Image (tube, rainbow, N blue to C red):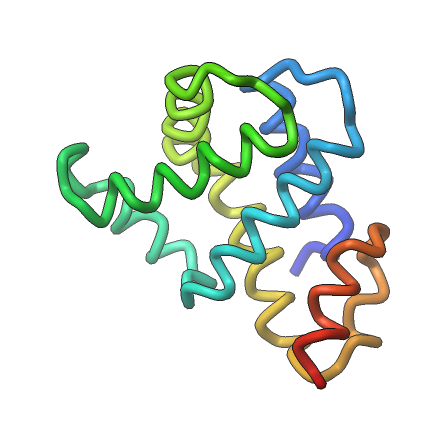
Length: 136
């Protein structure tokens, strides 16, 4: 399996490709936050994202999922146009490489629960703090 660092970097790269946001660090945080969201919702396998992708765009589960992705894109890119964020999220969901990378990160987070040392490849204190706080 690719390292957590490489998977996060790839997920952040695809976020850049869709948003063209100038802050690589914010895109890194965004990739981590999306992976964290996936892990919290037990979406740590590629199949779970593929099932989401196959849902009808008017399905409430799909709408809720995309709202979460678009919101995270908004938070880290400061793009105020919700449709731009929504469509960026949909394009990411249709990108199998992004899906695979972000699911790898989510799976690493799942496997590391209760073992913060397992997140040694994570460079941001922000995600480390998520997990330090969860173990208490």
